[in-house]
Image (cartoon, rainbow, N blue to C red):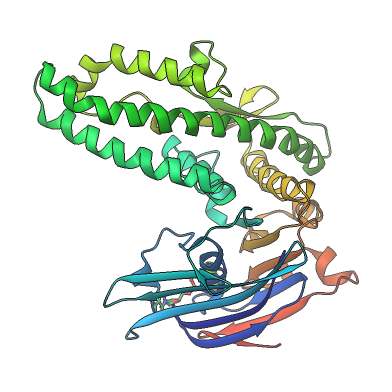
Length: 374
Ligand SMILES: Nc1ncnc2c1ncn2[C@@H]1O[C@H](COP(=O)(O)OP(=O)(O)O)[C@@H](O)[C@H]1O
Ligand SMILES: [Mg+2]
């Protein structure tokens, strides 16, 4: 998939920008704070109607302007789609459309992979960041996951509110908790089984990629840590997970009430990276930890390709963080993407494979929210 035409109006520090883009690598260079990440944020927003930084729409509107508007034409499965996203500050109104029809309902997931420097630290970070990562990634590939997650989070807020207010268990508490627990069980079991399925897909490919990133063969494994596994439940099976969640919620009601928050469910899960069978967070070198994430990102690219559509890849400032050897191998792993946006303050730090060999690439320069060079 590629973005062919792009129009950005009043978005972050861009007032009015039009671009015509081609497939292959697109190098976006510029000093810090000029608008490189903002450009990628605009493209991300076009597909997913939200920011990868988790910013509010109001913050993405160019200062002192009443709205932002993004428009792009996209080639996917040899068909052309016109996407539009607009947000008006005063009325807090967001409008998204595909081919002029309001709303975002596509029968397919947009094959987009996004990679930012923060992702490189994923192995070292806490479980909350890893949950945010997996939720972000799976919401991208599955509208169903995104919906389940939204409903789950809503129910969780309501349940936690009740747990905080109440002092003891009585019938009225049980009655009030019932509808929320029912939703937590329904949506939570779906989240768990989708996470399990995707992690096992990622695991296979990431493990192959990890070997490519090291001269010596090193084994990488991704492991999903969920309550289901402690209890011998097959987390791929929604019904089994539902049953377990129901039982566990009942068993822990008193403790949940004592603590004042909900303790059972996918909002407490985590996943870990193992190198040579050992927890990478504790035992792997910093280089191995980062390579594990590169291997995972490459796996996402390959999965889209294997499903029949080469993805669009955005790599925000990541190459400057990798050593020479890893940089080249990483770039060759990423080459299955159909269009690759790479941002950098220092073009010399990009993979030499890209700069020196005869790879055709587009070069753009960003200065204070204006793009030159095309
Ligand atoms: N809503 C906004 N309106 C105008 N400018 C903004 C807005 N939000 C951020 N900026 C500007 O965007 C710049 C950062 O752009 P960014 O794309 O993150 O930089 P970089 O090129 O380093 O990736 C900052 O200088 C900031 O002042
Ligand atoms: Mg940036």
